[in-house]
Length: 478
Ligand SMILES: Cc1ncc(COP(=O)(O)O)c(C=O)c1O
Image (cartoon, rainbow, N blue to C red):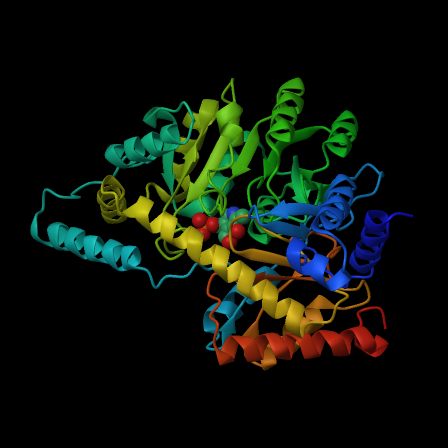
């Protein structure tokens, strides 16, 4: 065996034994050559061998990181439709997150300390002043599909990102949640089967449950999202009514579906003439150079209902979202009218004024940088304070981290114990309908701070997890 083969074998073993973990930076070429007393070329050859094997990938042009080779969460069995029975568990987790004074790593709330958030509320106050003092302003219901100038601004923003979209298909909603609910009600009815990702955002699962529909959960790959082969097989067997996906910086897994898979998904949907509901809630929060393409961008025949909001980019309390409803505009507008008549005019006026300026773009650039740094910080804390047996996602955007613990660890119990310590996390069991992810937890790093409180919280979580790993009586299987 020559020197570079010996070195690549050593590194391979270290990666497999988790001495270097997914996302962790490998030593620089110079330092590894000094440490191992081989030439830089030998180190480069060893790294290139591991890159070819898919174990590592180049990072920031200056080095390599370990790739996330977490096993695909899948089996070859064709999934069967199921009723969702999450009930009010997710609601109680959201309530606990909003009550908590401690360390908020649970519910997916963004950081809100930025000037743009204050600016938005100043504009809202000015709008309130106009509404209070001029009876001509806001003296009637707004159009159920939304305030036209706002719809135009939203359509223009999406066009700048590469969509071809007119304000005529935009509907203003109370957050992405309402957009998803209206979309589901517009394309399907109680008893129908909806394809979802496994795992999936619990709000969508709860919505499907409340509407009396069933889910067909298609397992997701950590790197590429929904397993499209399994989807194809499942569609041969089950009479599905719609596909609901969160393909960009997915909640909870963090993956972004590659463009080629997006195209395939659209082709599959076209074969069965199915609508796709695209939840793009985290799409703006990319850490790379540009936005990921949306499914909507590739949509030729109006089958994609695109849903988004300002909840993750600005403030989740603003409750302003929208749907680009494609060919379902009339049904969705009707559903909006019968469910809430219209979104509050005052809010829509304020958001339109806010989006008309250039502060939102500046703000987005700022929060992307902020979340990128926060991601690296929380990952460092995990590597430092948590047991090695945990594997974590490496999101390239958004602010959620998906942590897979050894199979016997009970994430629900961990959630309860952390809550007692004043630390809020999200138990993985909420993110599928049969608790398949009970050994997982989800962390929100948007509000991460490099201070004693957060570091202590990570140490505490590390201790709880270590205890759970070592003590079989702790597990859900005891
Ligand atoms: C993937 C995803 N979709 C939708 C929502 C709901 O968003 P909104 O607050 O805009 O209703 C959330 C909130 O966490 C989410 O994570």
